Amino acid sequence: MTRCRESARAEPLAGTAPAARWWWLIEVPGPWGRRAVEECHVPVVRQLPSTPERRVVLVRRPGRHPATDPQAPLRVWICGSLPHDPPPRVAVVDQHADLLDWPASGPTDGLARPDPQAPLLAVCTNSSRDLCCGLDGRALVGALTSAVTSSNDRVWECSHLGGHRFAPTALLVGDGLVYGRLDAAVAQSLIDSGPTPSTAGHLRGRSCLPPAAQAAEAWLLAQGAHPDPLTADCENVGDRLQVTFADMPPVWLAPETGTPRPASCGGEAETWSAWRVLGG
Image 1 (cartoon, rainbow, N blue to C red):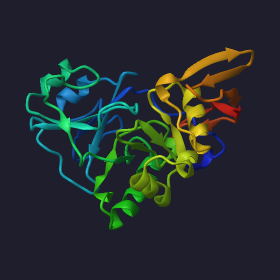
Image 2 (cartoon, rainbow, N blue to C red):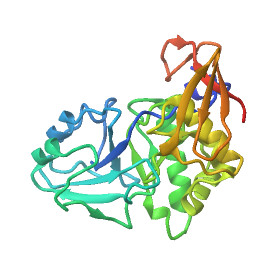
Image 3 (cartoon, rainbow, N blue to C red):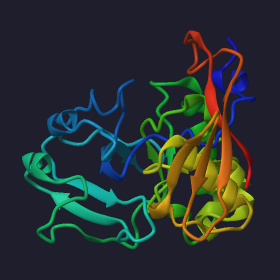
């Protein structure tokens, strides 16, 4: 069987990040199912659907760890996707049902506190969901955690981020930036330096932006620009799309479709669509 990653090499990365204004990272050690959140052995997690305002993912330390008591306190990180958002905050939740009352941006009662040791790079290793994520994601985590640096202990495994065909995929926690087709060198650069022009070619997008704006921001970042994502504006002009950010020249894009390919290993072939950047 040809893995989905190999079949999708011609498909553009930019503009494929999942929609999420806020990210909730919930620590759940042990094995995960194909639908990790919906099948989680912690009952309350199954009641936390992902929406464009909030995406829920499970995280765990690299390696094998036994599943915890489903009634044990939960550690939850709340992470934004815009530069002005607070840094990742963590809350230890004793009463699981409290999570059902939180707004997407997290608790407002001071329960969540800034955590300088929060996960920094969350790499999808959800092998039950897709073979590429399991093989390539775990290989990347292994390479990063075997390196001796001050920050690599902040590399965590996570559940599905969408886009199995772009494995290894990862979330740069606190930035809301989702990456794909990573290798150890690029991932290490993200850990050490954050987003830079040299890593922009692996950027799928900022999760709070629509796909076209994701692609435009990635293109500008590759040029060394730093657009303000809060000011993104998309306008149809004929058969093209114009994306503008404050104090930046417009970026022009056109829709593009490609040869059918499976979106995941063993899946049916589907035609892909993307936004191709024409220039600024």
